[in-house]
Image (cartoon, rainbow, N blue to C red; front, side, top):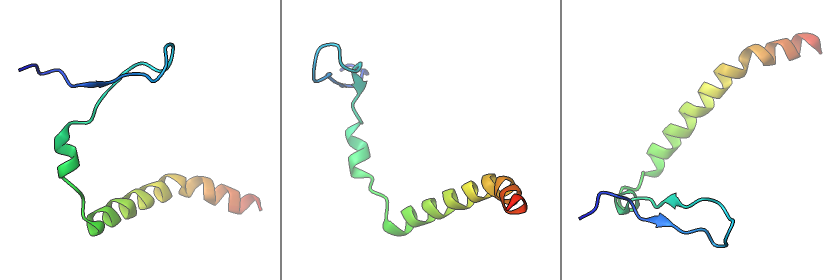
Length: 62
């Protein structure tokens, strides 16, 4: 058995390079809506943290 992942072939010659296909295991491990909501909330808070200095400068300039 080969350890290589199957690849998705480009639709046309000269198109994008082939990319590895997602393992079948990923399709089975679905995330619950609550888990997804927590991930989105954490990412939103992180982006807000990163943008806070810029937002402060924009508010001061207005």
